[in-house]
Length: 272
Image (cartoon, rainbow, N blue to C red; front, side):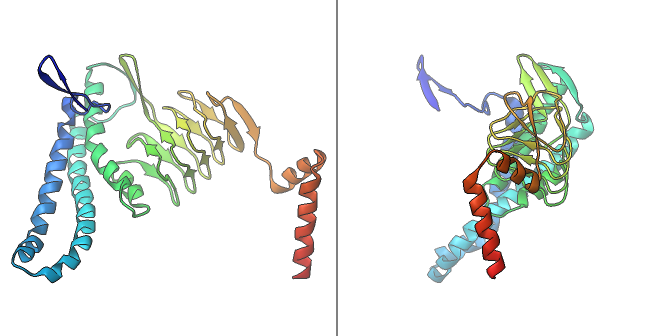
């Protein structure tokens, strides 16, 4: 948002992009991406100006291709910048004071990876974000699904067959007052992270763990496997029951409608 104050123009951004000098890395990636896109599109623009109007049919396809080209270009540049920055000061876990070296280089890494991750999430090609996360160093197992949630691009390990839901956040960093906390997050195999949840730095989810909807973990919290964890913070645990155990529990509660529905299904299966 732009506002006028004391006859001076001030730029206000909720992301702080214009206030943080480290966002200069994002600007470099953006300019390079736009330059490559324009350069590769000059031939089509030239033919259109010469009157080859039939080529207008290629414009929608060209725009679509330019979006992918922009994402791949910014990802490649981000990868090079990230390697350079990490060579100067490797990423570390710990608690860092404001304006310390650890804080400063974390800001560099944040802005370097921001644009490619934002761009790839806007593209309608599934699993491409998984590939880019792996390029940036996130350890993702087989058949991992992260949907539209946000995952920090460092100090994250997610096991095989784990799924996140909509609007989930997995953070390996947390800013509290004048301190930056960075801790590794480890999520085991066959886990489910429900919608509208926040996984805090240092969280460890054992295998076959479920984090219930609208829940938030504490920093450094251990979630025991084979249970559903819910709450703010997620301190309430419920054992995960098998189908047979669930049916017995429902039967004990006297759920007549459930019994009838199950009996109807069995009869239909016998008829078939």
